[in-house]
Length: 62
Image 1 (cartoon, rainbow, N blue to C red):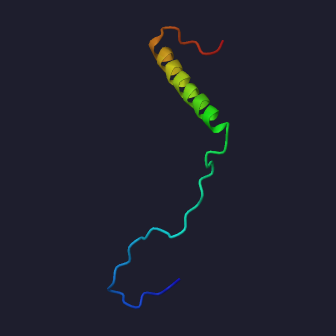
Image 2 (cartoon, one colour):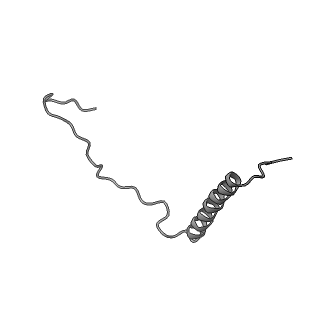
Image 3 (cartoon, one colour):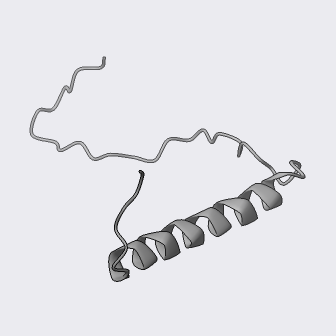
């Protein structure tokens, strides 16, 4: 680590000069399908919770 020569000077966070490449880069053909399936799962999960909380039939396993 470098030491500050001038202790009165403040140090601020700076953006690094390097960048990492994106993991996907648009080359994965299944990326779009995975996103569609994930959105469908989230919508179904929210719908299931709403139906469960609004219904009178609360037996989950018997």
